[in-house]
Image (cartoon, rainbow, N blue to C red; front, side, top):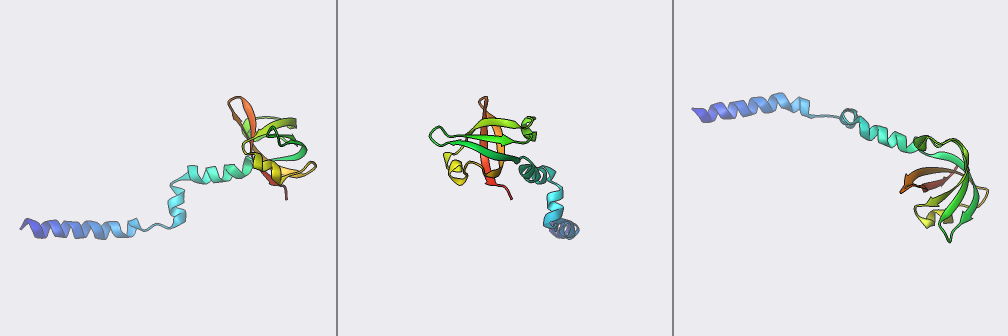
Length: 117
């Protein structure tokens, strides 16, 4: 007698859970606001700048930039190490750029440099 009752309970629980299990992607994402915020913050972490000097040998770039929000830094002209020297091949002196800056081991580092639109 226990087997039919167990099977009936299993079927009832599946029937009740079935409609609640279906979620659209947007419903699923609403339960993970951190992932959505991270993607949005990646875009806002880019800072406007202008290339003033490039030192490929030492992996450095001098940028005149606006405020860097994620570093709480006002606009100025300063030298950044680049995370990847290949970034320096994509720009030339005078280019308007958007870039991401971070600190690592006490140094200011440009981790992404893109042409400004």
